[in-house]
Image 1 (tube, rainbow, N blue to C red):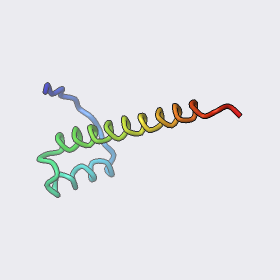
Image 2: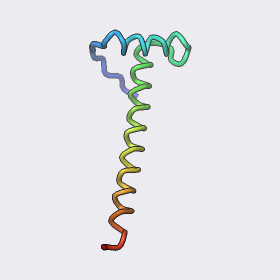
Image 3: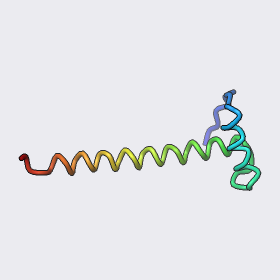
Image 4: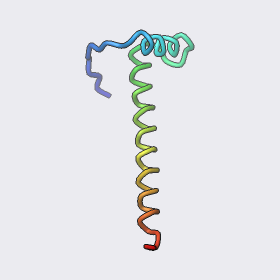
Length: 65
């Protein structure tokens, strides 16, 4: 995987969150924690989108009253 170096700023709360993940051993460093959590958020968003689309299709298939 290609890494893109980028400087970003975080709120104190956001930085404390990823630092806690690193301290707990979930990630080896801050960069990995940010990347990992972004990946998890992406998967969650895709799952929510799929559920929403399935619900729309289910409702479209209902008989018209």
